[in-house]
Length: 396
Image (cartoon, rainbow, N blue to C red; front, top):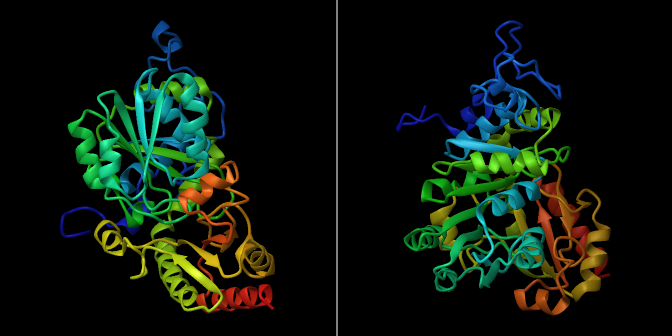
């Protein structure tokens, strides 16, 4: 237990949210793989879904295995309530659709995950929602974009794929002064390295597919809060069908037991790899907030307790050299996801930001030679050897 009386993050990762089956005595939360549950009474209120907390009717509405995962995430995020979804995008879209109405404005950074960008620009705008993008790292520009009709400010820090940061506590204070809510995607950092709810964010979202699950074997998303009423979002989740499956929730809850341990190794490996790539003669630039050369390194030191396992780097020689490099990797696999125990590499040009026109990618600084690297928990020296041989093979 910490000096402030709170449990440590490793202890929370292992024990929080456990659903103890007193009858059987299983050490782990059981998988309640059931679509429906017996009604507790024949009262009309039960048929209308008016049931006491801890009573389950239908898994789309709630399930004890899902609730166990939700409770663990809530405590990890330093929140009071969490909702689990079938994917990260289900969490993002449901959150925004719950709180936004026609005529509202949402302000967002421009250099964000491609799926979020696509949702904001191409799916919310037709609903008469005013979407405004501002330079990613410029807190003042984000604040200036907040008009009286601004309902939500959407943040991501560090961002995907350029690992830019924003002074989100400053943005949160300004948004609240103007009556706006702040939603923040914390997927890259994880609650081990950063807890935006402690700085006043209204919602923090995670793609559980990534670090929370940690083994590239599930799809999930989460929304956690301290003070917001999640009842309307829970109803929206039920209506839209984005509820999580009990088996997925079990895998997620099991994966989170090692979250603090894994993220510590991701942090350690990524720092070593970033330094190695920064000194490599065939790499033009490395984007990693743990490097002193990162333009926001001091901000990262202030906001983050660890710098994470994600980075990106630009290969000398342009797009063709980058494509040859990624094809030459042997230990590191070419795949589009991130946050697993294995190291993965991808080119945003062909994956997360492929929907953006070339001129838009160029404006955002996403070069055709950019490789995004999710550093796993393998031995760092083996990863360095693989990157070195791949870079040299591509340029030979």
